[in-house]
Image (cartoon, rainbow, N blue to C red; front, side):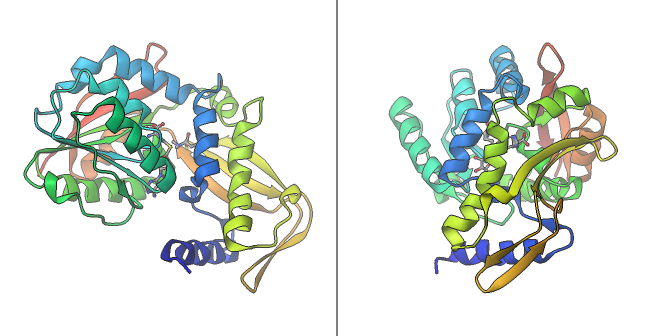
Length: 311
Ligand code: SAH
Ligand code: AVI
């Protein structure tokens, strides 16, 4: 069995065996899940992408002022690389662009397209889980590094995991590095609930694809009709929670293990934390980063933050 499949199998068995049951959101992004995420970014209800693109368009030159000429830009969770395309024209000449993503097929395809569209820009893709340590390309060794983490993917970490991630990124990017991060802001529960419960049911398909993937890749016995999408804003924890809820009592079988579900029991698949400017600044400071500037869209839905590594 391939290493990635072995790890996926072990995580699924541990997650379904836990109480309450859970699966990591990093497993949303096989080829089908990455395509569904792209569909989400085009939904009317999903303000995150639209608002962030507005910020990147409007403040491109202010953001670019935080990127030194000759820098290597490392994007964590680059996906379709849509947002770097929006910034590239405003940025000083980069020594290279390093898209890092767990979605291997999408990463390869986007690297090829970027190379075609920006032939002067060296593109060094890294297929990796950004929660684990990974090495930057040797060619990047002597250039200043700038991190780029758009899309509010940082919100998919628990706050203590976000802090740990930022501390590791400080180590990877080096002293004095800049880090441009998209951070989603607290807002009305109605807006949030709509964004994760779109009328067309795309987010539901994205969530349910996790089970389809487990069935496909791990040869698991799961009745996909036996689960439904459930997403809601947890006001106390300041996060959207996504769950897959069993619509009836049933058993899921994976590699000789069986997992019993009561009707209504859920698998927690994702958190999407929302921050205030102050709470995010405190978290970043604990991880060794200082916020130098931040921008929001006209409606104040989403933010982009420019951080500097203090050490
Ligand atoms: N940056 C894009 C995509 C955000 S979706 C945007 O702003 O629209 C989250 C991206 O992070 C996906 O492309 C997914 O494959 C990737 N991702 C999620 N968890 C990951 C992990 N642990 N390691 C590496 N990439 C991950
Ligand atoms: C990638 N990430 C920031 C998205 C989010 O909003 O938390 C994933 C997503 N989940 C449901 N819709 C979009």
